[in-house]
Length: 310
Length: 309
Image (cartoon, rainbow over all chains, first blue to last red; front, top):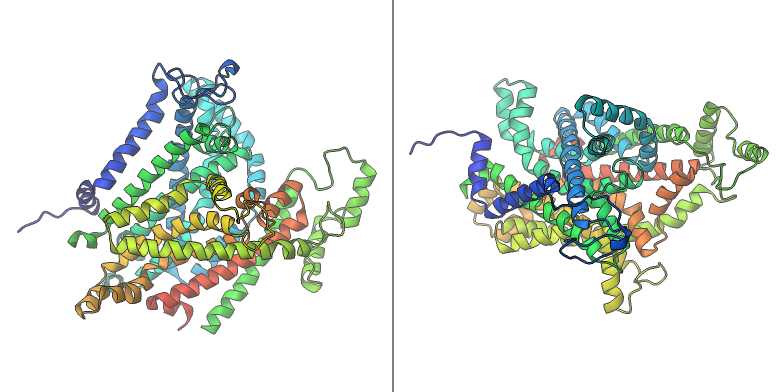
């Protein structure tokens, strides 16, 4: 039996296609992304920020599918627009954190010795710095450049301010979350790299005379990709929720714009009076994260070359 | 081994010094001042207060004084807004509460999370696996400010012997510890499932199977050691975080722990309290990460060279 050789990712995709839970999750994710990014252009979706006090705190109806909040804003529209923010934060901020964390942790774990000590003590320091103080200082520093950047984008693209501002004000948020989020990933990757680099196949690669970069990138990292995927999909909910905390502190999403995190927070405050205000954003939020994590597990299983033999 | 620990402790001291130095200058770079109030404070009173706490001196002098007090007199300074209260008193008062809560949540997280992850890995792609994952996901996807009130409401209605909020009777830790523990149990379950799956396909597990060992023994004695590495790497900082309190949990359940001080000290610009808390938290991080690294070396013989065996 002759078998055509496939790359790691082609093999993984083959295996992934037969994992039903992962494929269902993938379709759910695609559906939610489409709903949030294409949905707002549909004619019957209302403005997420239009206040209508005559319609305040309504239950779901034909006019307002998810009901309205105390200011009479349509909750369905707010959930869709909020989803744009949360999905973007989940994607961009997590990617920033994962990329920094993987590179940093891999270098520390592979180098060992003094380099490792120095790099990991720096992580300890960053871990212990007072988060709130950093956020306050950071929001001071970025306020002006962020406003200038928004004006520049408006000038170049000629879009309305209302469409540009909600996205560009997120950039400081991405930087803030990305620069804190990588710390735990770095620790996990370092631990895993240290475990893998003592294995026989690495010894074989060393004795073949491969360069350190090549060994790290081609031989060690593919073997620690499982824990990286798991932790990445695990980190997304925390990062999306961190967004609502940071937005509350004045960094990121500004009212009247919404995100899933901020909607859940608003809903939690009014849980006893109008529980649907918590229910709808929470359902979208958790469905997305459930799907993402099941997909992540499927991807991990698919990328594990050894599990193919089962 | 001893050399490794001593070396790490020395590094820890340098880490803490850098950390406190950075914090010292960062908090003073914040806008606002601890001497201002919502009401207008007359200028001469502010001057007197600043002279009293030494804040009118040049910054390098304040820095030197802080470290002399810290090292020579073991004094972390006083609160600025509450006269006569020491930073060390605030920490001594709130840390035991957070410690009890943190250890309890940690126990819950480990007792639920690790077995769930291991069972899910052994029974991969069965309904038990999906069930474990789904339960774990609830803990991650629902934020603390949702789980907390939900638990409080259901316990308040169902179990009358448990207080929904407060910190006076011996059972008061149950609800906050469950809330905090569930979140971390979810992380542990996912990380240990992933770690176990990596290990279960390795050659030494096949060797163990070939020797005819029974499956339970293979999982518990051979696979568990390597499979727990990602979870242990996560546990280091997570444990330090749990025993130093959580603002959200403490607010929901009215627990007098340390988490509230981290937030209030920053908003009140209580410089010395922030520095003291950071120093204390940094110490916990250094120790927890050292313990995590030692635990990793104990679990995986391949790592032992790096700790000086």
